[in-house]
Amino acid sequence: MALTWTHKDRGEIRVHENLEELSIDLVDYIAEISEASIKEHGAFCIVLSGGSLISFMGKLIEPPYDKIVDWAKWYVFWADERVVAKSHDDSNYKLAKDNLLSKVNVFPRHICSINDTVSVEEAATEYEFAIRQMVRTRTVAASDNSDSPRFDLILLGMGPDGHVASLFPNHPALEVKDDWVTFLTDSPKPPPERITFTLPVINSAANVVVVATGESKANAMHLAIDDIPLPESSLSLPARLVHPSNGNLIWFMDKPAGSKLERFKFSE
Ligand code: 6PG
Image (cartoon, rainbow, N blue to C red):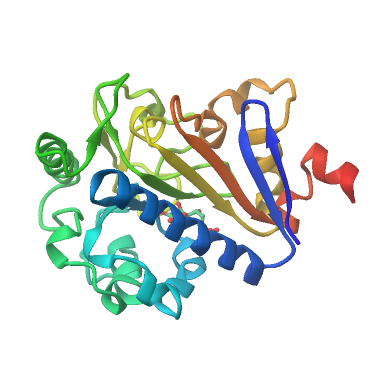
């Protein structure tokens, strides 16, 4: 059984017994938000990330989810992308396509990925333009209180350094406020060229999920969630800056990733 609680301003925390339990809870949650979003505005705008997240979504292609999810209403985006060819093993698009999107009935025209034939700067500009068009036509909702899209669900992984999307600690991309998508040519984690949603876009979503597993994430999880005086360097811990202004935030983790959380330590 998962240990679940709500932190007064860091959202809901779900510490799972094992990866199987986490995976089932995650796909149940995705299916629930998909259904609610389609009921509310006729579409489900979901934002993916790279890393192990996609493997935790694997059960979506199995019964009952494969049949109960209304795939035709899905619109798929990425919170970040490595600017490499879409056929390259580093591509987040390829990861999701091979393991999820090619196995369900999402319309190819509903998949909004980067142009991999242009420069990293152009890729960011074109990707933002495509999303702006979809906000204009109301496929993607607009935020009521900021100049940002309001995605139904943004799924993020988290690195051991606390990075989310391609927003890395102390990187200038964290400061970008006026663009929805920005680019990096110096990512501390290879490959160096990436595009990423900016914090205002992440924080304007209706629902944001951070999934992190393994002991290597425990310290970043503690710094991202617990009420502790943060050392100067943690002030720009990206995961700590995820804070939807008018939406829900849920942290899905396994016990090793949650092992340094104050609440978890006392409950063991
Ligand atoms: C990247 C990865 C990265 C990943 C996190 C969490 O672009 O380099 O996608 O951002 O999402 O490091 O990855 P894991 O869940 O696999 O640890």
